[in-house]
Length: 98
Image (cartoon, rainbow, N blue to C red; front, side, top):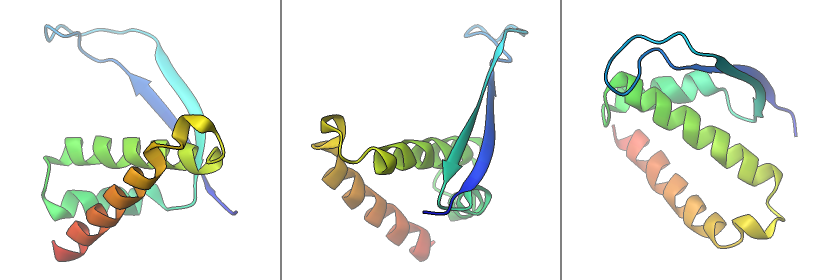
């Protein structure tokens, strides 16, 4: 399957008390069959979450879903997969209605 390639960087900018931090970042490469910036835009435009939460939700969900898709034969995902697929159908329907 052809995939888009992304570089993901996560850096903590504040601690849980709101103090600025300058800790190490985690950077990795991920692939996805969907164009993630378009997915983020659609979730943000739906208005179900504040923009930053919508972006985090969309990116996290797509990264998880792609990993599950790539490793769908693993027992770890056996129970989760049908529920995830149902959830994705509901999410896509809610984005069409928005």
